Amino acid sequence: MTRQRRPDPEPLKTNDSATITVGIVLWAIALIVMLIVRPDQGWYAWTCVAGIGMGFFGLWFVRRRDRKVSSSASAEASQSPAPPGSP
Image (cartoon, rainbow, N blue to C red; front, side):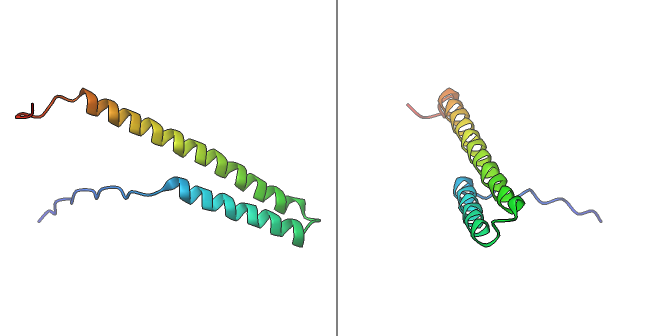
């Protein structure tokens, strides 16, 4: 008896930009705390700076990806033929 594989579920719609922005804010808060609590430990601060920098890169990347996806979707919609029975 073989089981048939179920179809994959649709991907969840998420707001990636908001998630990354929250991460950037948390890294910035951690940077401020580390500079107050441990000013002598420079690598803590640099870890937070790296997190902030990577967050900005991720934000740029996600926004660029979303623009490409939306522009390709609109191009496909404009090139698709009209369904039968439409004017």
